[in-house]
Structure formats: structure tokens, C-alpha cells
Image (tube, rainbow, N blue to C red; front, side, top):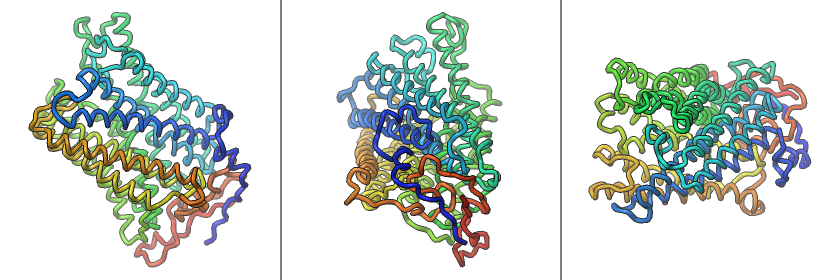
Length: 556
């Protein structure tokens, strides 16, 4: 079946769409593609700031004793690293960049439902980022990214700025979530049913509901801390009749669902990449779509597994332990279906697919080590050790961070109309994967042996693990720099670095690959007509009748 592609509207529309030179007009744009690119520039910049802080911590931990960061400075660097990585990179990265860029096109819309609100969410993000960096000039804060009371209420450090930063960043997340939900409901092409939506759309949709419903809880929590600090209202401070454990409950009621705000979009990207580079219909489409909603729902009920050692009734521990084990089921469904999709597929090894493989490996390690923490007796031993640091990074950075770069390399040809240098990209990927495991896996062993987390110093028996981990940080940093330089190089040194991208270099079947590269301002001049699903490929003798369907027909 032939596919009628939308017309390429030329260089003028390309520049208007945001692919051309920078101008101050970008700061007033309401085009979802330009806003996605502005998010991209900011998020990548803050990622490297946080990465630099992480390298400083690893250099300090290379040997026992104090090298160049004393305990107070280390705590400030640790806090800023956590706040930037979580609030400025992991949570907004995939929804704000690729949700903004690809989701409207995937559902057949010319923009999001609320373009001005979309721009406002970017300004909230920038304001929150400025306040977070301003806190450094104000002396920094040493509470850790969780802002646990009673310390955050009693410390002399300026906790107001980072808390306000987190509050504004929460607003940005809520506004983006509202926009994505409304766009899916109201602007989806009339001929696109719920079962014809790409799984990336399902993932962003589920994530958006978590952001809208859970983010206000942490905003209220931070405001209550400030009320207690400045007005003496006894909410969390036990000396004033408050309950510090209440803060932990309120914080994790948001922050554990936030884990899935971070991971669900990454899973959605994998669900998009695997069928494209297997050239095969996704196995169990409905199960993957429903599992995204199930993860969002069940993941909102397991917050107290962060608090097994804080003091809790045995009945509560048993319930939260069971729910924590249960939430792994829909995640396992996704991995099983991805592997089943690749079975007898025409697998094409490209950089996005390599990142998808890396995600499955790294996130599985993070998931299995999470199950160990769900076991009450084991969690008592490993709680607040470097085992938790390794688990957290395998889940968050091994999950979301890995697929951020996977999504970047997947949609880069569509966003900018340029192909990157594949050899340099492969080298960067190998360094990233090797460096990641060298950096974090030794911390599992050190944690099992009793190495506490968040410590600036340690006993000599842990030195070997920390040395290996620090060497790994240098390897992964080199890989990440190469991965980003590769993309910059294909834009700046176009004649010999890369090549112009085709409209559909991956032979994908979803709508985002049926418009020109990069897309014009108005990608659809008429409503697209959808006749098939987003993963229907005309590939013979794959052993699966479902895989022989033709690509989705787009008419405009």
C-alpha cells in the first residue's frame, strides 16, 4: 500500500518552524516545536551542570579523607546535584521535549490545546532553574534533595530559594500535563481511536495524569515547611506539636509517583523504538497501553516503602511491601512484550535501538534490586546504604537518562533534518554503557557490606569500590560528551559530519514520520485520515499474520 506523504513546504517554513537561526522571536513563540527545542537547550545545559557536580563528588570519594570538599561543601554539592538532576532534567526531559515535539503530530494536531500555557510552562521552568542556581550564590543548601524536616526547618542555610524553585518547577510540570491530557482528548484526529494511538502517546498521557494529581501534594508540603519556619506553625516540628513523619508521608506521596513520571515516558520511548527497528507490529499493544495506566495507578499507592525504617505499624509495612512487589508486574509485562516484538523481527541495529537494549538491561537491574527493598527484612539492612544509591541510579538514570538519549537520537533527524555520525555515536554509546556499570555496580557491593550513602568520608575497606566507581564516572562522562558533540557537529559542520535526513529514515509508520523533516509550522493542512494502526508494517514471512499489515495511510 502506498502512503501519500504530506508536501514539503520548503526552507522558509523550516525557518519559521524553529529549525532556522535563533531570534528573539523564539521567546514569544507558541509553536510546540520551537518550545520543545527551547526546553532541549535548557535541559541539556542543566544536565551537564549536574553531571559536573556529580564528577566533583566522585573525585572527592576517590580516596578516604578530605580531598577538596569538606563535609559541609559536599552536602551542598550533593543537594544541588540531586535537585538539578531530578527537577530540571529527569522529570521534565522526555515529556517537555519529545512530548511537546512529537505528541501533537502523532495524534494529527497542529499544536497543543493551550499554546500560550505551553509557553508559560517553559517560563515557569526557567524561573525555577534560576532560583535553584541563585541558591548557590546565597550559600547553597545542605538538606539533600528531599528537604527532610526537622533539619530543613532548623538549618541556617537558605532553604527558601530551592523550595520556591521546586514549587515553580512543579507548576511547569502541572501545566505541561494539563496540555498533554487535553491535546489527546480534544485534538486527536477524528479517525484516530484510542486503540490507534502510538504507545508513546499512551505513556505521556499516563504520566500527565500523575503530574496533575500528585504534584500539588509536594507543593503544599513545601509551603507548609515555609509556614512552619517563618510563622511558627507546628506542623512537622515535634517541639511545636508537629509530626516529622508526616512530612515523609506527604513528600513520598508525591515523590514515589514522581518515579513513574520519570520512568513511564522512557518506557513509552522504548515502546516506540522497538517495533520500528524490528519492523514488526508491537506484541500486546493493549497490554502495554493498559500497563502504563496500571503503573500510574498502583505506583501512587506504594509511597511508604521508603519509610520501612521510619516507624510504622507491622500491618502497614506488610501492605506496602505487597503493593511494591505487585507494581513490578505491569513493568514486567512491558519488557516481555518488547522481547516478544523482537522475536522473528527484521531487527535493525541503530543507535536508538541500542539505547532501548541498554534500557531493558539497566532498568531490569534497577527493578530486581528494588524488589529486594520491598522485602522488609532485607530493607532494614540496606536502607540508607550505597546500595540504594546504585538502585536509584539504575532505575532513574539507567531508565530515563538512557532513553532521553535514545529519544534524542531517534527524533533528531525529524527535529532538525540532519543525520548524525553513526560511528562517533556508537563510540559514545559504548563508553556510556561501560562507564555506567563501572560507576554504579560497585556501589551495590559496598552497600551490602555496610557503606552508608551521602557520606563525604568512609572507612578504608570501601576504598576499592569507590575508586572503581570514580573511574567509571570519568568513562561515562566522556561518552556523554561525545554523544552530545556528535549532535552538535552534524549541525555545525554539515558538509563532512553528517547528512540531510530523509522524511522517514527509520521506515516508521506513525504520523510524526509522515511530515517533512523538520516539520513546518502547520504540519497538517487538512485533517489526516488514519486507516490502520501506528505499528503496521508490510514485512512478509515474519511468522505472524498480524505483522503483514500495511503502514498506516495518511491522506492530506
